[in-house]
Structures are given as structure tokens and as C-alpha cells.
Image 1 (spheres, each protein chain N blue to C red):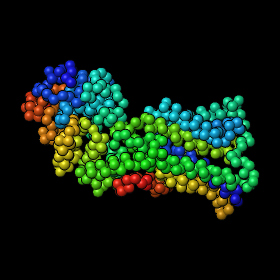
Image 2: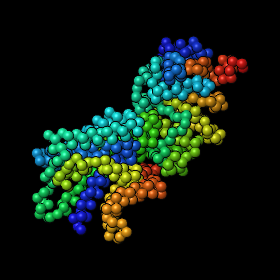
Image 3: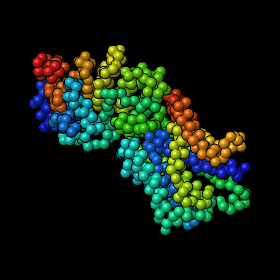
Length: 306
Length: 272
């Protein structure tokens, strides 16, 4: 049971990282990104390919940087487009990444994937046994990312992004460099997605193109919608509950005897869809509302950071 | 400061506005397909004054305002601010140049609170940088506090302080207009362009707005006002441009233009 819970914990952390990134891009800045999985895949493959030669930490940093650079590039090309067209471009990007990985065998080993990826702290892992060390490492990464994103969200940077999401024209008339801010938000999100991919490569120690299908993107959107657009705390709750639903429904077969396991597994995804729809009807703002700065906070504490 | 195109504007118009121009629009033309929204339009807004811009619907007033603030690129012609050509400047740079505007149809940033709407506006916020937002916290928090003090004073002045922490989407139409002006003021502009500030505003709020604009003018702010409400124009403006069919028809004081037969004709048709 313990190894299973650890697996779930790590999958939740990876999903939460991807969700946090999308929450910045889409939740806060209003930039729809249906190519999330492409950036995760780039992070994973960068890590898998470079970690043996440059070490795990530089490989993770490189994964984040490459994903950020590609995000920024894609944003520069397409972000002037209206929302719907940006959606189309990002879908295309996600697919293109998958196809490149599948077909450029000299680099990515094609459909066979890359095996035997060395985890960070591999020697420690042997010493303590199991995946405990890796869970702690993953929690550490999540914590750093969460604190940084929460800092950005609550800073004037986050407020400007929210303003741009609400109305880009007004924000521009108020002197906000809309284009530059959007590109930055998109690049930061891309970097975090790259990190999530790196964690996935390290955890599974094996990656292949089939891991990077569009369902990863869907889970990220579900987590943002469930948690509440713009709220990072809500996103963690959302990602947690989506994964809990996905995994928890596996155990339904122990309690329900009317339908068999095969039917149940087919029903699981449907149940999650129903859950999301119910939530959108009953609580459209998400589980946790977006944080707003209270006037009294800013007025009262001149030197203190609240 | 007077340029060739300013003189051209004077030839068409009536009385001469002798003060230097703060904002000048020179022979600006803008077409939307076959429709000529602005037809070699030339006019100016005098420094320190309140300049009105009136005309029948479809005269091109809002298009002109959009050209003045960079939201619409003219097909030809130039816009000068204190002598500098700003025609092709990106929209967000206009605020830096000391120019602010409000919108005809109120476009509030609905998910921000009233107070956040105001805190958004001030220029040069270090906390908007990616690095400084995380590592320059002390600095931007101090800026934030200073801006908050100004924002509070403004909200008290326009009577919206009790709504500070409410989402701005919940305000009434008139309150949104006031918030729009207050937000523009936090940019510390030298020139504010108001697009129909009186539309949909209750009479008491309108009086409040007139008082606010007068006070600000006394503090040295220049105004340009697009408006249909002649009472508001008469109360506030010391110079009025009348537009019709994308051009400047007449300019002068409110008394001069309201007596001008061409203005009456433009508004009521040739039969009048």
C-alpha cells in the first residue's frame, strides 16, 4: 500500500506543477494553452538526454530554460492572436512536439523511449529504500515553485496580468506593456512545465512518447477549473482532488458488485467529467477564490510584507 | 508651437485659440473599408484648458480620440504631443508621455477590486518586473503603500471609499465612470481625454464630475472632452471643436459655436 501511496503522491506533485504553470498562463494571464503536454515532454526529454553527461541539477535547469525559451518563442509568434487562435496554435505545438519525439529516433530513440534515467540522490535512495527520498525531493521542487508563483501572483506583476486578462485594451491605455507581460507569463509557465517533465523522467526512469498524450493537458485544465482560476492554493486542492478522484475510483470495485472492473474503469473518466460539470454549475468560481489585495493591508503596513 | 497644420485648422474654424497646443492632430485620415471615419481632420487641444469635442453621431469623435491615444493607427496624418510625433507609438507608451483617457462604454477590470483598479494605474511600478516582484519586495511594497495613500485620498474625493474592497464589476454605471477617471488620475497625467463622461451618469454624480474636472484643471491638468451633453460642455469647456463627417467644422468658445449656423445645420440637417 505504501509504495502505491507514494506513487500517487508523486503523480499529484507532477500534476500540481503542470497545473500551477497553466494557472499562471491561463488562470491569471488569460492565455489559453492547449499544448501544455508539449512543454512537459520537452522538459522530460531534455532531462533524460542531458542528465547523464551534465548531472541532474544542471539538466533540470536546462529543461526549464529550454521549455521557457520555446514558450517565449511560441508566444512571440502567436500571442497577438485572439484567444481562439492561440488555442489552435498551442494544440498544434503539442502535437508537433509529440511527432518530433516519435520520429526523430537518432535523438529521442523514437517509440522505444529512453530507459535507465538516473534519479537524483540515487545512492541515498538505495540506503533508505523505496521512493521516500524522491518524494521529499519532489515536494521540495513543488514548494519552491509554489512560493515563487504565489509571490508573482500577489505582486503588482500578478495584478497587471489579471488586468490584462480582464481587458487588454484598458491595461494598455493604463501604460501596461501588455505584449511583454504576456510573453513573460507564458515563458514562466513553460519553465514550470519543463520542470514537471524533468520530475516525471526522473521518477519513472523511463520515458516514451505515449506518456505525453493530450490527456495530460486535460488534467491540467481540470485542476485549474476545479481549484479556481487564479488561485494557487486552489490549484493544489484541485490537482489533489482530481487525482484522488482518478485513483480513488479504482477502489469502487471493492464496494460495488453490480458492475465489473472493466465496466467500472470505463465509467471512471465519465464520473470525473460529471464531477467537473457539477462543480461548474454549483461553484463556478472554483474551490478557492482568487486572492485579492485588501485596501487595509496596503495602507496599514508600510514596511512589512504581508 | 504653431505648425502649418494648426494654421490650416484655424482657416477652417472661427475664433483663434491663442494658447499653445498640447496635443495636435494634423490632417489625420482613417478609413474603415469604404467608410471615411476621419477625413483629413486637423485640430488641437490647448495646454491647461478644457477643450470640448462635439458633433453628431458618426462624426468621428471617438475614432479621433482613439487615434489620439494610439488605439487606432491613422491611414495618414500625424499626432503631436508637446511637439513630439507620437503617431506610431505603442499604446502603452502614451501613459508615459503624460496622457490618460477614459472610455465611452465603461470597461472596468471586473475581477479586480475598486482599490486594485486604482493601484494598478501608477506608472513605474518596480513590482511589475519578474525579478523585482520576488526579490525587490521591500521596494515595491513601499511604492504600493505610497500609491495606496493616494488611491485612498482619490476614492474619498469621489465618494467610493466605502466600496474599496468590492469587485469593480458590482459598481453602478456612474460609479464606474468615476472610477475610470480616478484610475486615469493615478497615472498623474498632464492631459486627460474623457470619452462621454456624462453618458449614463445621474445628475448629482454629473455635478460631482464637473466639480472634479474644474478642480483638476485648477491644478494644471489639461482636458479634452468628447460629449453629447451640451450643458456639461457649456459648463466646462473654454474651447469647443465641432466635428461633422470626419472633419473639423467649426471651433470657438461655446457661445460662438452655439450661434454658428453651420453647427445648427450639422446637428439638425439642412432644413433647419
